[in-house]
Length: 192
Image 1 (spheres, one colour):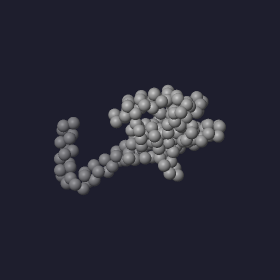
Image 2 (image 1 turned 120 degrees about the horizontal axis):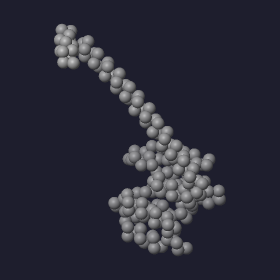
Image 3 (image 1 turned 90 degrees about the horizontal axis):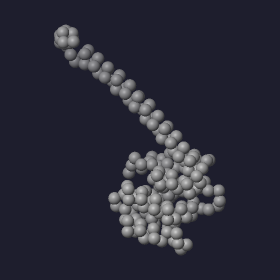
Image 4 (image 1 turned 30 degrees about the horizontal axis):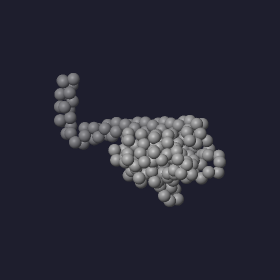
């Protein structure tokens, strides 16, 4: 599992974007820090997870992209959603439903990460303005990455073209005997 991380800044809040096996996962923990009240990031995520609309969104996403998703466990959570006694952590959601759209990373640089589709939905729980800035910054990141890839591709193309010239010149000068080279040029001139 290859991972590459980068950071975008959304309304003065640094938000980690981690690429895991060609998919982008965004730190919900970082995003939750944008809340102006003193609520802990983990509590913001838990409160978001306990609503029925959130669980329906997550369940639909998992059904679309995860063949191993445990729908029966999901139905249990969906039936409990909205009750004042219902609580759900991201870790519990992942373990009980075999979800792949979110993951929890423990440790110093840990937190709760979600697939970009889910993270954009979580952005609306922070605020609609935050969600729009998140989309804008994420798109800027992707545009920058594409520009770098274009430059890299052009550099490789340039090197390949020049290597071809060097190799063909080396073959002409050192591999083909001069008499055969002259004959092959005459033959090419005759054919061309």
